[in-house]
Image 1 (cartoon, rainbow, N blue to C red):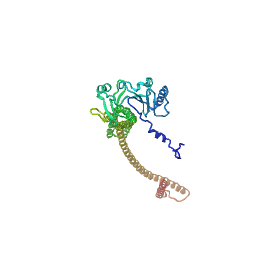
Image 2: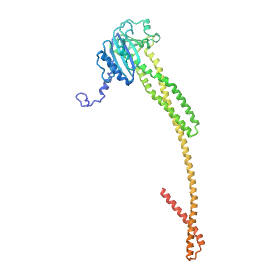
Image 3: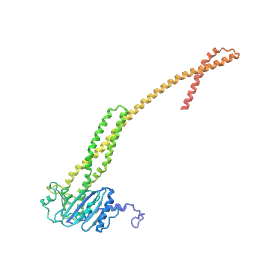
Length: 434
């Protein structure tokens, strides 16, 4: 049993230390300009976590660095020629390399160039983000417009003063010929932790933006499918007005169930990606807010550029998700209406069936009454015949008996007796039935 704070008998929750340490799991790297930063974001499923650790372990062993702790999601170490910060997220892994020192030309000597190429080429997963950040020291000559145009695409170049004006940032959000995006940060009085926090936020903005945009191709792909399902649902709803038989209603209900299954399958296939996109989009917004960007006259801000491009994409994804759920609700309402119609039709059939059974019961009662009359006549006939046999026997024995007379007189008595007997039997049967 885990012990509580010293001097107490309190029991610790098994996750107490893990939850507290989570707040300190991903500290900012302190940076002092000039600094070269290279960042890779690898999209990799949980199944590749073991391969990532093996790959990272190989790099540590090559440079004689302590191994990554088992179960860790964050690792940072100084490899001499470069420093590495490794982070494992739910869907992706990031590798950020740092090298302190000036470069003859921005982006000419990136930190990634100091990492063994064979190890970089073997990174597990698929490359989603690759970006270089150059942190220029305070007091260094500002880049001219011609110099900026050599490193960035002028039509896409954005600029913003960050963290209250202590950093000047340029980027064009393009992937250049070397396969990397580029960001230039001019130090204007940042503390080392401020510089590390700014670089971290810039890298997270790049990564989370691309993770959010993963939902856009999916939204575009299923858009036509949703339109097709929508039209099918409209046709099925219109057919409800022309249904005549129960078989027609059953066929339509089967088709509605099939359409509903398609809708639910579509939602199941996309709900995780769309939910993740919303979360990543929210993180991008938070990171832009934290950087406290100020506009530079005559040039678009980074946050303005991102929001202008990212917001429509996220609205598209939200629209598709809303259409999916709206279709699901419509299909459910249509199926409910059809089931109600089927239930009403069945109630009508049951009512007709009960009426038919009632008519048959009345006919059966009349037939029974008719049969009872015939039964009394038959019983009377046989009983009178027995009386006649008895009278003839008495006549043979010497009694002066008029057989035909007494047979005739016995008919009313026998009839009344037969009728009374049948009534007693019917009453007894009713009592037993009750």
